[in-house]
Image (cartoon, rainbow, N blue to C red):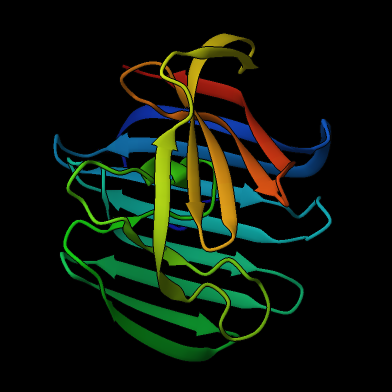
Length: 231
């Protein structure tokens, strides 16, 4: 697994895992590895390596998220590589504003966007979708990284309206990480994007898998091939 910032000796490992991406049940060649660590009771670090170098896109993403006690991201550093683009980014999330800086092929950009108090933020990896959600009274507004790859607007931040809800009130079962596991499916929709997040049926609610819906048909899916919780 590749890192933006290497783990430090004082960090305590909490959980780790790996996902395999598939299309119509056939592996695409893309895999995602992640590790969740803590340095104190209040802050955690999530590292994600989304490696599609063996897939058709050939893309690579690295993420390093600082997560607070409320399980919200306060800062996200990321790297992206393709044949034509190299991007280094940093997103700082405050109560009602987001500051994002990017270097795209050695050209620098900065954005500052306003958002309502209680806005959500997630990033497009399976582990990154863990931070999608909604509680009553919150705005259904999120700040996300623009997912259309190509050109200088790649991975800019944008403000979107979204919908998020549980698809069933009971649990279902799936094969994940070598065993039968219980999960609850949630639907996340914004703009023309739809994801079904298969959250573990325990207090962690960590994604065991994901499905991308395109034109009302299931497209790329992901399933956990490794999932370890250390406490």
